[in-house]
Length: 353
Ligand SMILES: *Cc1c(COP(=O)(O)O)cnc(C)c1O
Image (cartoon, rainbow, N blue to C red):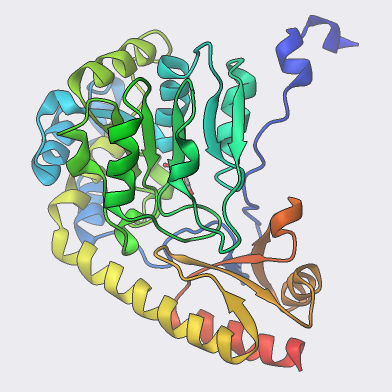
């Protein structure tokens, strides 16, 4: 009974379950919102030319070169940028740094499921706020006492996005606590709240290289906000792990940001494929939530989500299903290549008919 050595908090903890990363090669993997294309060729060059002698040294603890290109890219100062080992780590540090308050924090009832795990890990109370019948976040419902607010924009797993003016209205009324906007998917067509961080010192924006920059394997995320918010994140980071990003991740991330042409082209390709897939799904009788992301959230009136998922799996296509009541008849389908999506639609035609 080794469990007797566990801390009480860990005994009760229900960890986040990441989407499956199967070892089988010929699967069409539409379950974790990865980019179906490789990262920029400039990133590949960095890896090919990397001098491995450097690996005996520790990496730059503050990822300064990456900090500089990100600050330039987003037109903020160096001290407005915090870099972490994936945005999951940035989120974890932010929960630790800002959300351990008297009042509960607020978040949508349907959102990124890691948020509630961080709450349990750090003993933070949270009040879920229901999304509306159209599966949209209603920010006017957040105008109540709170210890902080977090939502993903666009939201996950629904894909729908808020306008910047709605977010600004929230920041104007909610002045006494921090608002975190998780922009993991913002590059696929939503408006970033980074502009608002310059005007409102209680707004922190978090982004990632995992989806739009096709670098999920390197684990790179960052936050942008008022320099005192960044300072708090640095404190947590330097009390936990001073070297969150390895040398390769830092160098590759810089190369990715510097190749904006590739980035924009990739985004357009994925968005075009998304829009084509949405039309096809609608024609097959699916209800699809309008998406500003690299995935579609869809339900079918005649065939259940679980049956569709099981049938697709037999055809070696994997999609993501969530068991939460409100969304248990929906599937989240990541956008793959054109060919992969054509195959998906062809299989669905068989399954639905
Ligand atoms: C994918 C995702 C993340 C995590 O991204 P990483 O940078 O890979 O850790 C965070 N938030 C949302 C909403 C996501 O979908």
